[in-house]
Amino acid sequence: MATTPTTRVTALARRMRVDIDTATYPASLYQQLIGRQEVKLIEELRTLDDESHEDGGAMREAVTGYSWRLEIKLLHSTNVAGTSKDVVHAYLRTMFNLAKASNVAAAEFGVRWYDRNGLAGDSFEGRAYVKAWPPEGGGPGAQDVISVVIQGQGPLAEITNPAGSLLPAVSGVTPTTGGIAGGNMVQIFGRNFTTVTGAAGVKLGGTNATSYVVNNDSLITAVAPAHAAGAVQVLVTNPAGPSVDTAADDYLYV
Image (cartoon, one colour):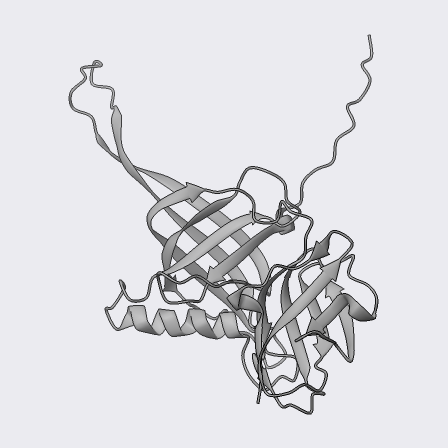
């Protein structure tokens, strides 16, 4: 007897998001790692031969711990103007250089991995360092791809998915400074941006952005309005409400 097929939707690997904590511990400032082409979380058990059992010569192993790492194919990115490397990419390269100088403890940072659509499960956080940074090379027209290995240091902890809320959240701004006359392009990173609309959807210091484009759910490109000198909040609002003010959304008018 034929059975009725079960309706299902296959989850996509690209739904997974990676955030890097660029602040100095114990402070925290998670920013999205953009330009990911492939991401693999690898957890491996550490074992030793178990000589305490006699199984007719057949080998047994005892688990003594585990290790974890993220293997990422990263498309090297710049700011909108193309004048400097993406801030998170530049941070990872700096931390790799620090680890090369035999200062792994100082080169550790926080990393978290979760479903960007808010699905529960498969959400993790831990401390890590950059163990490998090999460019893939290629001809003059090839993309600048880096095969980054982010090696876990200590435990990998399960966390509540940060994308579970429908509220927009700003996880980073680049550049973080601009002139009081406004007019410069600002990239706003975060989540839940798809439903942001209207003139008041993006504000800097309470003033509507001159214009903005919702590039995707995690990136808005805005033109900064004129504003008096000082630090202001970059505020994003969608139908669920406004983003919460954090250190990650600070923008300085000079």
